[in-house]
Length: 121
Image (tube, rainbow, N blue to C red; front, side, top):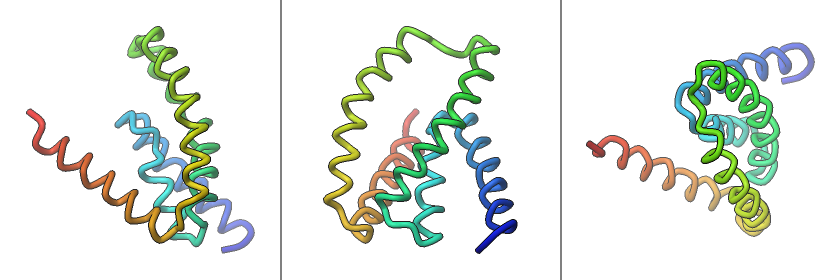
């Protein structure tokens, strides 16, 4: 895809991911990364590009949830500070994983999460 249709496609995909992220709290990466890989991005580019998009989406979702008093600020900040360390490690780890293996790992994580959520009471 090139030009206007590419911009329109990414804008519509962003809207869909924004809705999914704000609704589920999963950050949207579970939607964005597979989409970018499907479009031909390497696993590493898909993850990095997804984080940029998710950062923008997350700021908007945080503002909306903040207005609705649905944010536990202290817990979120502490989790975020810990996440900084994990994000640095994860970015370096993904560099050593092929796109084919990344797809398998990502699918296993999503499947395990889905099974857990389905059977959790």
